[in-house]
Image (cartoon, rainbow, N blue to C red):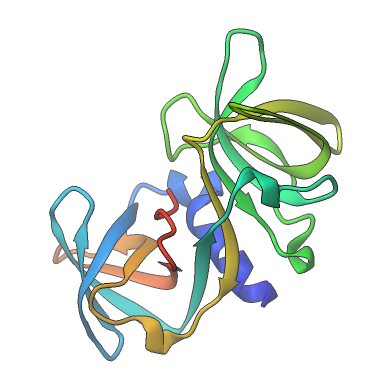
Length: 198
């Protein structure tokens, strides 16, 4: 379980993987799956040929809500800065307890322009009609985050390679090959109506 959650996090929530010049983010629907080869129709309408590395990892995410974010939860929050210095959440990933401490801290998030990623413990939560405010704490700092209904809130769940079939929604960080195809070692499946992670 720890490896699956780590796989998802490395896919979309760490800046390091995104910084490599030959890596790219692939998000979309599986059109064809044969062995370790996938054809993915991406969210921008393109078709990506992806070869999955031997021993590749598969993880899943399900839709969650602000009510699932509890005091003491360990979360990864992709957000944009607000004028008052606080953050506005774009995506919130709720880690399993086994993943507490993964990538802890606050840093730029290269997935979206002018955004940050904060992996931290929820120290305080305040709910209101139009959303929630949480205070995240990590060694050396804290961040105040507003979560509106527009934020993509997801939670890690187990997944199996057998679930990679035509029609499923997937996200991955892949390396572009000389022939224009891609290779990847981890795939995240969006389950039960969950929005694809960035």
